[in-house]
Length: 431
Image (cartoon, rainbow, N blue to C red; front, side, top):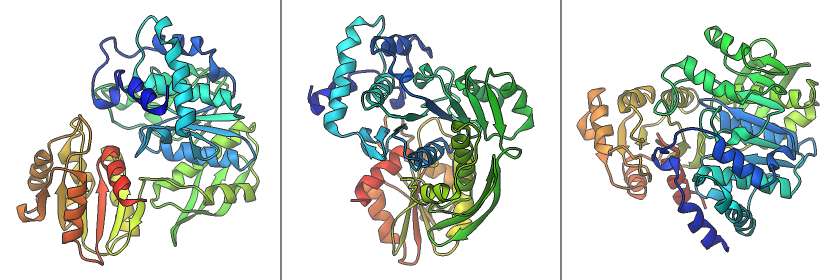
């Protein structure tokens, strides 16, 4: 198949990211059989497996950068994508090209008829990533969980290092209903041979992680963490501590205090990958100085300032609001917000600090799961925003045009609420 045929074949499969529910429910049987028919490529290299309610993509990208700085060939699998599905499968910092993607999807398609049940879109992409990384013989693969952990398609791999960034409430239509249940799902990526790097610090959840079979565990706040985080031009300067003591004055070209915590988690994961040994300070500085996070407090325009942030749950929205107040406190703020239907618009807008914004432009993200933007607008009114400060538009391009027309040059436009919205906006704004 060429890339057009491969994409069409892939899109003919059930895509749970579109909001549809699998009739059989969460299970690994399909994925295990698919991986087996491909020769279990996920066992061809060591895996750093990353999950968490927030920060897992950021942590995964930082881990990949730190490993690559050691001269290793690194595969990186993340989801969802912002603009192109090729972004999900990365080798040594480069997204898979169309030719290689078509080739590996053709490989997966060749064994589909041998399966007992039809795989999902995400299972196929995960299998393709595993197979591609085996074909190019990576030294290590950093694999981000799609949803939860225990039943996620990526969990056919056995992690050398299992990373859990944090635990909060999200995707409760699939996992929940409380933080303990979410923690249990996420702890499912920890295998008997894994070293667990745990970023969650809630002592009430500790027994869940203590019960997970593992080869070892390192804890945020005890074995690693953030000593200090200071604003700097274009990001932050952080002091981190890990297995061998402090790593001081590390420049992180990212906005948001939460990225310092993600960097500490990533550093601890790579230390454990190398047997718990300290990493050379110069390697840490080199790697973290090159990290980029598209769609995560990303500045994509000036006059007015335009920021994209894929905050898609209450915890992420609160982190975004805190970062804006600390790092971008001046100028009239226009929020461009689009939510998915499973999100509580009142909780999301309150966490975003809607009453501190001058105006809201509500639009639907390009997803079948989009929440009616009029519902978002009504929630803003309930929270105290004046009707005349709210605009409802039908599409992302119209929302950006409207935001530019009403925001002064010394103001700021913040696009958030859904990665689908942010991805569509980024495709229009970044060339």
